[in-house]
Amino acid sequence: MEDLAAHIRAKIAAGTLPIPPDGAGKLWVGHGNGRQCDACDEAITAADREYEIDLSSDRTIWFHAKCLAAWHDARAKGLAHTPMATNGYGKQTARARLRDL
Ligand SMILES: [Zn+2]
Image (cartoon, rainbow, N blue to C red; front, top):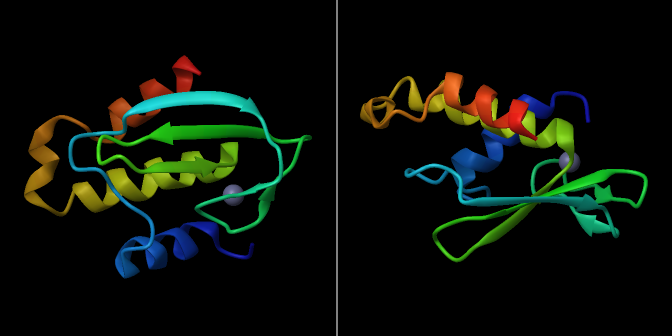
């Protein structure tokens, strides 16, 4: 993936990658099993760690570790330019959550 951040922004803009307005839902971490990553579209193999996020909108998305970080980053940047920045789920929170993993 040459520019993961740009790829993720394009998917968000196209509506194929959700950005939940009320923050990410439950997050699960496990070994990959070949499922396609929702950010980079590549397989999450057994050698990778798989991050599964259950969004409140009944949708589940899967990421590689680096893709999850890029998604959080894209969300934080996007939210900074919209009124949703006032919902308290900004970059600081995203970083704190990543640390908690
Ligand atoms: Zn990925």
